[in-house]
Length: 222
Ligand code: PGA
Image 1 (cartoon, rainbow, N blue to C red):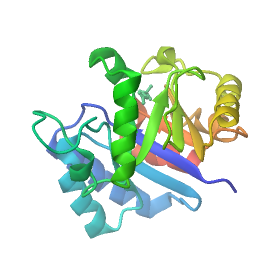
Image 2 (cartoon, rainbow, N blue to C red):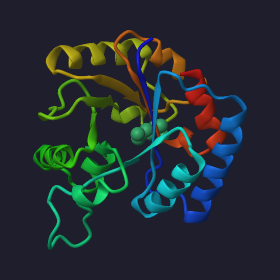
Image 3 (cartoon, protein in one colour):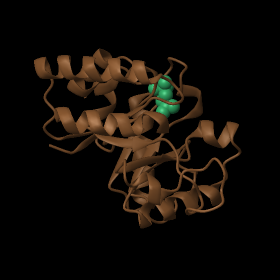
């Protein structure tokens, strides 16, 4: 059975109270019916929720790891507004890097993305690099890639499992990757179509991860 990565990307959503409600629901429903066996579950909330969530996960033995949604391309120092990998490593094992929303709204370049990857790896945080197609460069040090075609993000129109599998195959031929995930309008009804594909090793889930019950169903159905 291959290892699957199921990643939740909350983006800039949820207040502290909403994050706590999600965790309480996850705790309740998880005890009832979810098996995770071969699955690495990773939840990426906004920075502001990370310390509270780390404590909650530890206290209640929840079966997922935490990730961040971004990391500074610089180390610690005079970089107002940034969070460095050395700081993040106290809280997370993973970080999403190069999401198309960061490229589009924050002007993130391939050069900055490569710097982020480098610093994450030095701090023992595994980067989950988002690529928009097989042509997006994958910097050295990346072993998990998420293929996320821009048209599929938040649109309710996912790519086809066949096409996503073809892109995953090309990426694996081109780079030494441990895992290629698919992201873009994944939900509990379509997730297995992707995870059953030969070259796809999991999913990156935005909107459908915001409800705990739906996310648990995705974990279950994957
Ligand atoms: P979506 O977002 O699942 O809401 O389409 C995925 C992502 O942007 O990572």
